[in-house]
Image 1 (tube, rainbow, N blue to C red):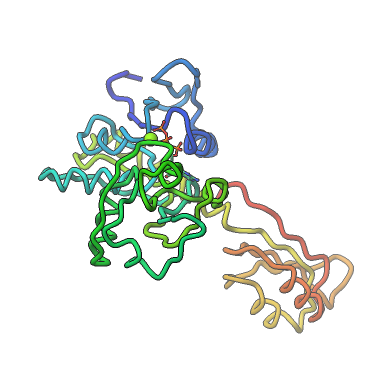
Image 2: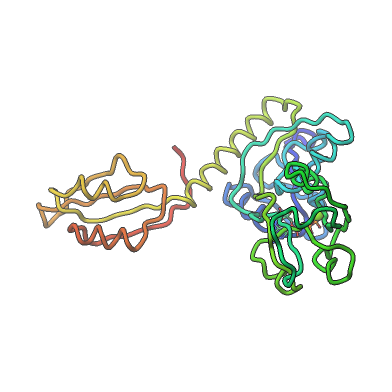
Length: 299
Ligand code: ATP
Ligand code: MG
């Protein structure tokens, strides 16, 4: 494996995305020698190197073609993109896939005791945020003028410290807002992590590796959303039972050794099976219903 031809992937070194990124690579069969101190980590089994950086740097590394792939929150990606566009730069990259982690929302929040009558309430007020470009775009769309207060951290203390009337910050559970006496009044952007690739074409070998990785990622994500369902069904109720199973067209039907009135039915369902559906299945005559997780899938 030539060092210069390794696929370079930028990941967050330490933070909310790092563990999920490492877990995803592991599930995709990419073995990495992680060393807490090192900024570059190498894969043992594939020509891949991981650059471990602050998440804010990942969009720029992709836009500038310094790395081949990156995993980043859509919020940070779009903020950086808007910033560069506003500065008159042209940017290009490929968004390969949204991932199923890093979910959060960018919201406006105000003092819990303040009345709120729509976003107009914030007209000409100062709003503290680390996402000035996403905030500006939203407020422009709403036609509400405001004053920007850029803070790179501790945004939620801005109202109580008298720095701003409102904040625009990332929220997942809302517990941080509540702990700071704030209430969420408007969701302005919903985000998940995503996989991005630099715009400039990769050589054939690297692109083939990216395609393989992408197929594996799809397999991991599809598997986590799917279930393997097994049950025994009366032969005369197969149509009714199939109709109750979510996203199933072609179940596998197998004979039972000791009961000719029933068959075993095996299906892969794109959705989980809820207790209510299991109860309905049982009421029609299904029995021995098992719902199993799927680890990997390839179609
Ligand atoms: P870095 O040191 O790499 O700059 P950071 O402090 O900017 O890290 P984190 O707090 O680790 O960033 O968050 C990284 C990303 O995780 C966010 O940009 C967002 O996409 C996602 N995320 C998911 N849930 C949350 C949340 N509750 N609060 C903040 N970010 C979240
Ligand atoms: Mg950051």
